[in-house]
Amino acid sequence: MTATKGLEGIVATTSSISSIIDGVLTYRGINIDDLAENATFEEVVYLLWYGKLPNRSELSGLIQELNSNAAVPAEVLNQIKLYPKDVNTMAALRTAVSSLALYDPEAGDMTPESNLRKAIKLQAQLPTIVAAFDRIRKGLEPIAPKADAGSISENFLYMLTGKNPEKIAIEALDKALVLHADHELNASTFAARVTVATLSDIYSGVTSAIGALKGPLHGGANEAVMAMLEEIGTAANVKSYITEKLENKQKIMGFGHRVYKNGDPRAKHLQKMSQELGKLTGNMNWYDMSIQIEELVTGQKGLKPNVDFYSASVYTSLEIPRDLFTPIFAISRTSGWTAHILEQYENNRLIRPRAEYTGPSHQAYVPIEKR
Ligand SMILES: CC(=O)SCCNC(=O)CCNC(=O)[C@H](O)C(C)(C)COP(=O)(O)OP(=O)(O)OC[C@H]1O[C@@H](n2cnc3c(N)ncnc32)[C@H](O)[C@@H]1OP(=O)(O)O
Ligand SMILES: O=C([O-])CC(=O)C(=O)O
Image 1 (cartoon, rainbow, N blue to C red):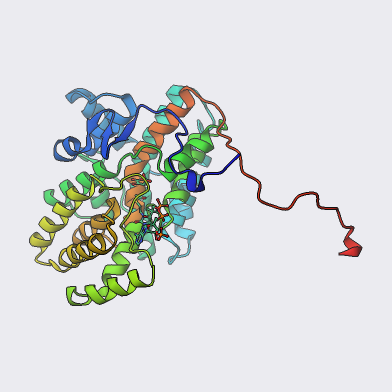
Image 2: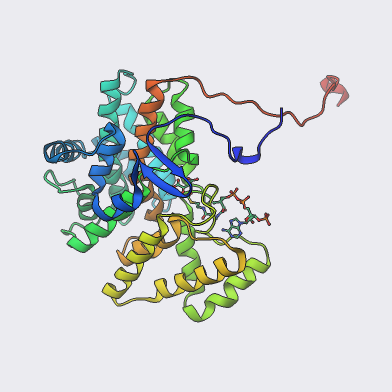
């Protein structure tokens, strides 16, 4: 038995949800470029869960269901009020999502209908949790979700600020959610599938996934990108900062990918949005710095930006706090996680690989008094 470090290139399951073939990403066979240009996030959620695009009445039915399930149990909101105000936002989200299960009477029900209902509740309630936590830590009262919101993006921005968001902000966030919704067997989705393959419940699967997404080699990279941009400060400092990092063999966050070696197809959409939003807000600094960083990192290392790189400047232009970037990724990826969890349940087998043992052998047991 020989281990493959990081399971690189190992095909661990079959799936009909999303594919990455020759650098092209599809959701249910539809190219991400088409979805990014044309689909709303709710259409994508429907596509991932049901395997087809919704017609008008199916789409409005889903939006209604999401709206009517968006309120979070009062007990969970009261618990969030007890969290330390300066706690890591992904840690707060992980804890709150785990506690949702305590107040859902059907948490342990394993029928397909019940699991789909819980997927809807999770998709509807994650935005409410993230917005509520942000307000509570600022000493503000959480805002209840709108019952008639047109989209998750609209409701989330409304719950964050208490104001009706501008159309441009809703559309920009919506496109970012489309681009982050699913990605084959990425680390957090794999974590979700491993968890539920023991026939554990969907809340456990999504809680595991949030824990995996949090790390800076995965979803946490978008916050790390913004931290880097803030540290660099202005375009004039980019060259010396990046060159020094690369010379010291340090990683530049938002670059590189396990699967894409010729570029992440999602990045160009986020780059365009970053430029457009920079122009609209009259602040091109983040975009200008990002472009320069890309030129240097691609030029010197051949590494291309991934989905996390330009999403940092996009969210900043939308005035979203840096430490909400990864929770927003989680809001979007809940659609993919839950689609994969439902697919895993449909055709389940315990996921249990082997380890290549590299420790000592033939060791004698030494009694404690002789150690
Ligand atoms: C949504 C997402 O999860 S997208 C990924 C988000 N993560 C990041 O942006 C973090 C930065 N990127 C990385 O750490 C990596 O590129 C990963 C984790 C995404 C992929 O990792 P792997 O496939 O395991 O590649 P690995 O880390 O082994 O890198 C291979 C080589 O490229 C280098 N490399 C990879 N990414 C980077 C980077 N961002 N900056 C500088 N060098 C890099 C490594 O140092 C290594 O060099 P070496 O062979 O000289 O040691
Ligand atoms: O697929 C991966 O390894 C990481 C990624 O880009 C994602 O989860 O969107």
